[in-house]
View 1 (cartoon, each protein chain N blue to C red):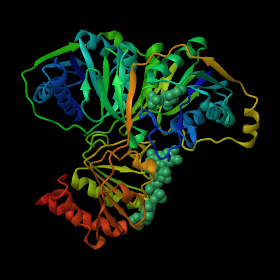
View 2: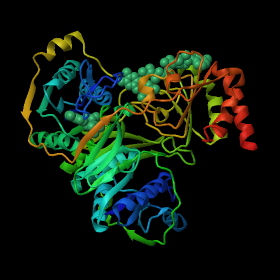
View 3: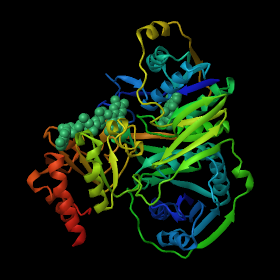
Length: 321
Length: 247
Ligand SMILES: Cc1cc2nc3c(=O)[nH]c(=O)nc-3n(C[C@H](O)[C@H](O)[C@H](O)COP(=O)(O)OP(=O)(O)OC[C@H]3O[C@@H](n4cnc5c(N)ncnc54)[C@H](O)[C@@H]3O)c2cc1C
Ligand SMILES: Nc1ncnc2c1ncn2[C@@H]1O[C@H](COP(=O)(O)O)[C@@H](O)[C@H]1O
C-alpha cells in the first residue's frame, strides 16, 4: 500500500508536523509495505524539500504555486495526485487544513476517514486504528473498511524519527483551472515567525485567575524563555483579553504539547477536553480544590503573581546553564 | 436567501462517559442531549441574519432517530422556521453526509452551515464530506459571516491568521467559534410557536458507511498530581527537566 502524506508549507519550508507525518508513514510502511510519498503544494525551497528524505520519504513531490488553490480545488488536486501515485493510505495533519481538505478528498475517493489518531494502526488487515472521542474522555477503535483510508494524525503524538532514504524529488506546475474560484480574497492578516499553538511542544496558558489582560506580560515572558506558544481559557478570549486563536478546549483548539502550563485556570471539563493529550500538565491555582489538579502532573497552590516570577527566574537559569 | 444549518445531537459537554454493555457505544442512560455547541453558534448567526432581513428562511436538519427530536424542537423554539429529520441511526460521518446530500439535492439552499466537529465523535468530517458529495464550493474555519446584496462576506481564522473572503451562494461553510459569541436560547414565545412549526421526517436513502466502531474504552487513569510548595515554585522547572524529562 503506497502512503501519501500531504505536507503543508509555510514561508518556503515544511510545517514542523510534516516531518512527524513522514516518520509515521515510514513506520506504517513497515506494516503495509509500499512507498512513502510526500506531497507539498505552494512555495518550497530545494534545500527544505530534501529534508523529507531524512525521515523516510522516498518520493518527494512539490507542486509549485505562489498561492494555494481554494479548499475545493486543493482537494481535487490531491485526489488527482493520490490516484496518480497509486496511494491507498493518505495522511494529513489533524489541524485546520487537514480537517478542511481531508473529508472532501474522502468524498471523492469514497474513503473512510479517521481524524485525531495518536498512533499506528493495531493491525492493517482489517485496518484498525484508535482515535479519541468525547474530546479525550473515551477512546474508540475503528475499522476503516474502504479501499482508500484517510488518517489525520494529532500533533506531537508520534514524534519525529530520523530514518534517511535516497529520494526521487519532483517539481510540477499546477494547471491554471485549479486557481479558478468563486471566492475572492479581500484581505489577509498573516502572522510570521510565531510558534504555532497547534504545533508547539510547550504551551504557557492562563485563565480568568490572571484578573486582567494587563497581567499577561509575565505569561509571555515565560513563554518566550521556554520557546513556548501562549494559550488561554475560553472566557479569556470571549472577553477579548486574548485573541480567539489562543483559546483551547472543547470549543477551541485541541492540543497535545509535551508541557502545558495552566495559570489561574479552574480546569472545567470543557477546558480539559482541549489539553488532555498533553504529556505533562503543570497547574498553578490559589484554590487547592480546583479541578485542574485532578488532571495535572505537577501542582502549585498559590497566587499566580507570586509564583510566576519564581518560575521565570528558574526557567531563565536553566536555559542559560 | 435560504440557509440550512446541520444540527448534531450530542450529550451535554459535562457528561461523565460510561461505556455501554456492548463495548461499542457509550451508555446513554440519563444523558442530557444538547445541540452541538458549534451548530448552536451557527444557528445563532443564521437567526441574527434573518432578523436583519438578509435571510428569508432558516431550516435545520439532522440525521438521527426519534431521540434527536427534542434538540430539533429546541432549534425551532430558538427561531428556526422548520426542521427536517432523516430517520436513521447513522453509523459514521459517511452515512450522515450521504443522507444530508439527498436533502440538499431535493431542496437547494444558498448557504449550508456545518460545525467544525461534533463534540461526541469529534469527527470533523461531515461538512467537508457533504461539500465533496455535492461538489459544492466550501470554506473552512469560518469565524464570521455577513450578507449584503446577495454577496457573502466570510471571515476565516487559522492559527492567528485572518482572511476575509467575498463569495456567493451556493456555498457550504464549516463553522468554528467567533461566528457568534453568546448562543441564542429559546424564549417563552418561541417555545409556544415551536409546537406548530413543521418538523418533517424523511426516510434515509443510504445506510452505507466507510468506518465501523469496533470497541470503545476509557482512557487510562491519570497518576497523582505532585504538589510543590509555592515558595519553592522554581523547583517545578527543575523537575520538568530532571524527572519528567520534557524540558
Ligand atoms: C458548551 C461549552 C463549551 C465550553 N468550551 C470551553 C473551551 O473550549 N475552553 C474553555 O476553557 N472553557 C470552555 N467552556 C467554559 C468552561 O466551562 C469554564 O467556564 C472555563 O474554562 C473557565 O475558565 P477559567 O478557568 O479561566 O475561569 P474560572 O472558572 O473563573 O477560574 C479561574 C481560576 O483561577 C483561580 N484564581 C483566581 N485568582 C487567582 C490567583 N491570583 N492566583 C492563582 N489562581 C487564581 C481560581 O481559583 C479559579 O480556579 C465551555 C463551556 C460550555 C458550556
Ligand atoms: N447526525 C447529524 N445530523 C446532521 N448534521 C450533522 C450530524 N452529525 C454531524 N453533523 C454536522 O456536521 C458537523 C461536523 O460533525 P462531525 O463530522 O460529526 O464532527 C456538525 O457540527 C454538524 O453541523
